[in-house]
Length: 301
Image 1 (tube, rainbow, N blue to C red):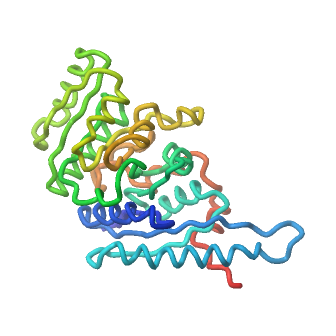
Image 2 (tube, rainbow, N blue to C red):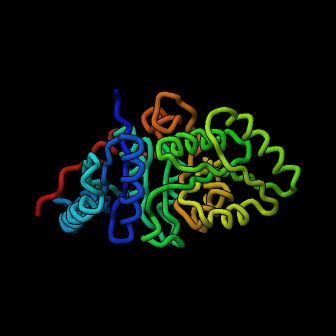
């Protein structure tokens, strides 16, 4: 049986939530956990004979970060390590996810949102992130999983992923629909009922008002919110789609985003396509360049 690891990205103490969340996913899905530490690699200049001297220092820092991350993952998880050396961290992480055929890519706390905005629209698999508003201590057992549903193709894929996670973790499933009017919310809730009929028990919640704000408020009391993203090859300001972008920034629990282009696949842990099956993500480094960067040997000083 092929493996579809969970990849957790670790940089510093603010990334401890990524390791904790990644370990939870890996245990529930019975998949390996790949701990990835990325650092900015300065390539050889045209007139230089050696790489920039700072590469060795940054690589050593990435290795030290992985040692700290491994201690936080727990002894009951199959842990593997990966150094990611790249001129563009978001592209390299997307490439790593594809290379290992990841089922989920978990990001550490991204307070400025730069990596998240760059990575999620072109990610080849589901991406999980803890918003800055979530305290590290709150990342624990996932007992209540919410799904933000609006009937779109990515929301349907997200519904499948949320259902699989709820079943694997013996967690309660809360179906959240938010419409500008009660009629819109009722229509989407009916559509979700048809999709879920006979598969899993769930709690329906119909919300009325601005979808971004009402869904973010409804995450209070949830341990995870799953949503789809509609954005791809769109302006940066709209890259995630307004609802998913707002949840990533303001949800009161970790967020799992299913990017556009990630379709359903019944043979995978989440019931959606894993990274290798999704093809090269938008904006990924060319294969030859990526092979040089991802998993590159640690520079020697």
